[in-house]
Image (cartoon, rainbow over all chains, first blue to last red; front, side, top):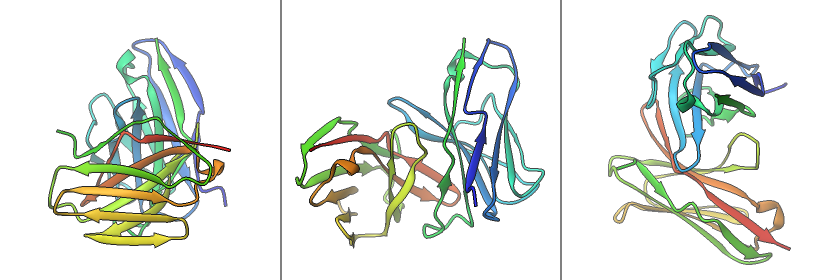
Length: 114
Length: 109
C-alpha cells in the first residue's frame, strides 16, 4: 500500500515549456486535490476532483489544467510554464470532503521555472 | 483577507516545554478546523480536527476553538524533539480547504 505517490519529485522547466505532474493513489479514494505551497502563502488549492471524470477549480486555477480519467490518477498540466509557477506541488486524496475523511498527501513535486 | 491567518514563527522551545500554536479565521460560518503537521520535505499529515467550539485532546496534543473570537489553538504538552516540524491550521467549506501559512517549531533537546 503506497498511499499517494507523485511523479516527478523534482523538475526544472524553461519559461513556456509544458509538463504534466502525475498523482496516483491506491486507497480507492473518490476525492483528489492538487495544491501548491509557497513561502508566506501556505497551501492553496489549485483544482480538485470529486470522482472519476470530474474536475473543479480551486482557489488558484489559472495557468493549470487537470484530468481524472481513472479513479486512481489525477494529472496536473502546465501548458506554458511561467516563473510564477515555481513552487512545491502536493497532491492529496480522501474518501470524501467531510472533516473525518482525512486528506492524505503525497511527498510533493518541486518545480523550478526559469 | 485570507480565510486563515497564522503566525509563521519560527518558534524554538526546550524539550519538555508546553507549546502554543495559534490561528485566526475570518468567516464565522467555518465550523470544522484541522491541524496538520509537516516535516521538512514531506507532505502534510493530519494531526487533529475539531468541530465548532471547545477542546479536543489526543495524547500530548490539545486542539481548541473559540468561535467568539475566531481563534484556534494547538497545545503540545511535554514537547519532544520529534515534534519539530511545521504546523498548519486549516478549515473547509464544502469541497474547498483553506490552510494557514504554517508555524515552524523546533524543540531543542
